[in-house]
Length: 255
Image (spheres, rainbow, N blue to C red):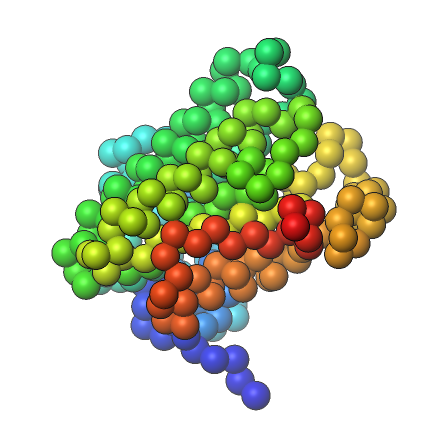
């Protein structure tokens, strides 16, 4: 049986799409018929994502942009609309990790980086995306947060947890502000998944697998495809009444 084409001819923008989860999300949208704008700060990795999508028969274009820069993010959305004729779905996945310090000792440079990219970057993206969507029949936006922060806390990950909890709160507040304009805003909060971000410093993937057998009720990390499936669901018509949802995909860690 062929895969359902939930996003045929729809235009999807994915930030942080040069690697990891963002790349898989972009690939999954393209596999279901979307025309995908893949965005990030590094042209070479974005081109790799585009090549993978095109090799599988999909349509994608790469756009370099820094979500920490408001003007650059508005330019990104404008370029996406100019290339594909609109914007139906946006996935705000760009983010960075800084850890290893307590609250009292957290480096202020790292703090500012987390706020600039993980929080203000999501706001910049939302504002640019909504500016288009509100005048063109609405759309769906999915922000990628984390189970760390709003759902579970661990020592030594102070700044990252605060930034991702802010994404969850930002998502819920924005969802209420804009649903009357036909714009559905939701979040997905992954736990440890198929990403270098879930590796401890110096840890191998095999060592992570052993650790997760103890730390996760499921006994393993989530695959990138499993997280992407949650993103695609929230972006799809089937989730038409999901507004301000924060969908946790973490194998039961925060249950």
